[in-house]
Image (cartoon, rainbow, N blue to C red; front, side, top):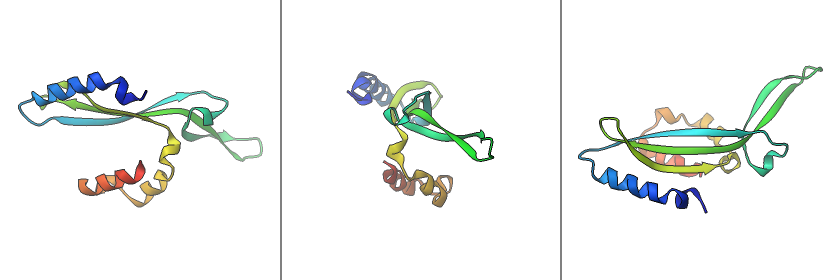
Length: 124
């Protein structure tokens, strides 16, 4: 069972409330990291690697942060009142391999929305 099946009733209620709005709505997006300490990060997924300092010989040391990413979309009325969740997607970092290189070549804050849709398709 995935998040869509678990939240299907909630999404249906959000669609009903959205349809009743007299005007357009706002959709706010956020990505949340759920981090866990694991001996074997490959069993849960990896969110990032962090620099934790240097060893006695001066070599940089990194630590793998394990966990899940949750991307959610909250629907709000024009007055800012919550309508409900429009989408929730859980993922792990290995599904997005190569996105750091993509971010270096594309500045998502400087492109038209039409291009963002195409770029987003490359990441999934």
